[in-house]
Length: 266
Image (cartoon, rainbow, N blue to C red; front, side):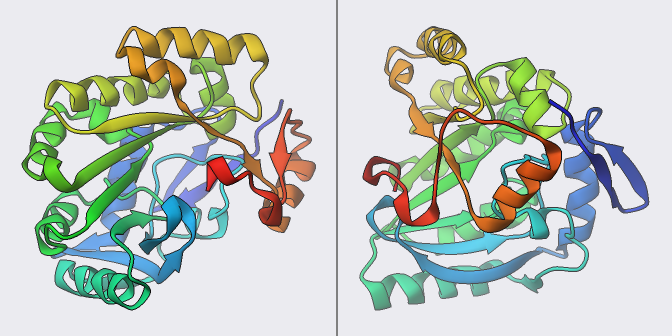
C-alpha cells in the first residue's frame, strides 16, 4: 500500500511515511491557536450518539487516508475562523437547546491541539450536558498531565479514543505517521483510566485482516477487560474519500455509503 507526499505546513514538508505526530501537533497549533482562541470551521447538530451538538475544529496531527475532513486537515492556515472559548460554548449550547440534545462535542479535526483553549471550553459548557471528547489520543498519551486536567470534569466527560488501525504497522500506513504513534494512542487509554476519566477505545478496522482485529482485542484487554469489546469504526465512502483511496490504490475490507451506515455505528 503506497502513501502520497505530505502537505506543506508552516514551511515544513512532511513526507507521509515520516510524520512525527508530536512535531506536527506543535506546528499545527501555531497556525490554529492564538491568544486563547482556536480555529473552527463550522458548528452543527449531528445525528451521531443519538443527536449531539458539534463544533468542528481545525488542525490535526495525523494525515489519515480515510479522513472525511481531509480538505480541512491539510489546509489549517486557510480554513476556518478564530473563536474564543466563550463563543464556542455559547454556540454549542444554543444548538443543544434548539435540538434538545443532552450531548456536546468538538470534532472534525483533533480537539486536544490547543490544550489551554479546550480547558477553558469545558467549564463553560456546564454540568447539564455530557461532553464527548473525540480524540486520536496522541497528545493524551504523550502528556500524562492532560488526563489529570480532564479528571476535573470527569462527571460530565466521556473520552472516545479513536485508534487508527489495529497495530503499529497499520497505524503508520494509514496515517503517514511514525509507528510508535500507535503506542501513544494506547498509552492515552492507560493515562485516562489511571485518573478515573471515563474513556473507551474505537478502532478503524476496514483496512485490517481478521487476525489483526483479534490481536488488538487481546491487547486492549490487558489495559482493561471491557476494552476487548472496543467500538468498531468502518470506512464511510464519502465521494471525496472514495476518490482519494482510488487514486492511492488503497484497498479495504469493509465500507459503507453515507446513507448506509449501520445503526450501531451512528
